[in-house]
Image 1 (cartoon, rainbow, N blue to C red):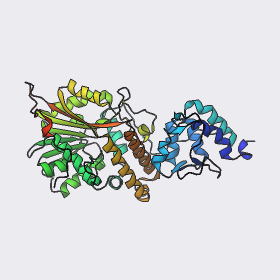
Image 2: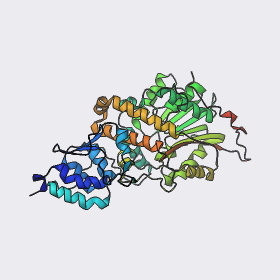
Image 3: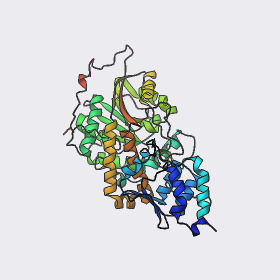
Image 4: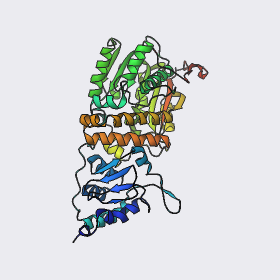
Amino acid sequence: MPMSAHRSVAATLEPLVKTIFHGKIPIRIEMWDGSSLGPDTETLIRLHSPMALRRLMWAPGELGLARAYVAGDLQLDGDVFDLLDLRDQVVDDDGEVHNVGVTPAMIPEFWRAARSLGVLGLPPAPPAVEARLSGIRHLRSRDAQAISHHYDVGNDFYRLVLGPSLTYSCAYWADDSFDLDDAQAAKYELISRKLDLKPGMRLLDVGCGWGGMVLHAAQHHGVSAIGVTLSHEQATLARQRVADAGLADRIEIRVQDYRDIHDGPFDAISSIGMFEHVGLSKAEEYFTDLYDLLAPGARLLNHAISRPDPSRAAVAPRSFMARYVFPDAALVEVGTAVSAMQKHRLEVRDVESLREHYAKTLRVWVKNLEDNWDEAQKLVGPARARVWRLYMAGSALAFEDARIAIHQVLAVRTDADGSSHMPATRSWLDVEHPTPVD
């Protein structure tokens, strides 16, 4: 007879939960039979069904937890930032801080608990929103699948989260009075000044999203621009935004791989939140291709998330981020990116970290999502809404803790004689407090 006939789920799972939390249970955990563990806290975890235990048993670690959460077998109630902070803030009786997590070493304990509760079974199918890519990594066809997985989830959903600017990279909070749209406009202006955009110049924006950069550059700096993306939904809306702004004669939006652009040269290239999708193995090819598209003296601005550790570029294939958010992504350490640029004749002239700016941006996006939670679930379904909430909150904490970073790297294609056409001082970058251009 299973132990669950005599004991509650909480009593049966208590030894296992204490192992996960290194002896102390710092948060209330409610079980599917109504029993619970831990103190009475405002933030809590609910296990809605034995399926949560089964998912962890068959995929111990981050992936099992992610699947249980995304499928709704495990629910997080309360402040998502407080909940995620538990990963790094559990203190044992000796005062030592531990990371919380389910490890393969706990598999026997999971099996014993599941057998005692009578919930042993075959591996559950992953949630439908888990990425399932085919083909060789970073071939054109697979890159298109990866981009579609993340970006083709509905423009209305992204507008709800990102706000009217539809800008999916960190804002630049140059002034305390800025709202999100102001800060995103300031980011575009910062990039425009670094690229020294002027009327009549030709700009290429690689990974143009919904067209924010090309719209800003054309409206406020008089350039003509081409924006490329692999997302059909992004391109459709970007073209509409260009038409609505009356700029169809100066801006072209294409669904196109960067490797298929052959109509250079360009006077400037911006790459904002695109390099993360390229992959470490393709980094040098990426910068070689962009170099070939630049006119002599033209500038490239690469705005990308990175890891501090150069040995950890790839997103772990069994991680939550790889399976649900950014499949095939790589966060290339900024020094590695700089070296790849310089190896391929792009002279790096300026590097700026915007880490704190991205943390603040993500917290605003999480608030937008939570303030519109019911609508978000209607637009993309409960599972995908849970994915976005967890990934954005976790990313905000990762930026705040310096576990990930973001840099803008400005490079120039020098002339054959070594001339860069760059001023000798940084006075050209007088943008300590840029404001949106009217």
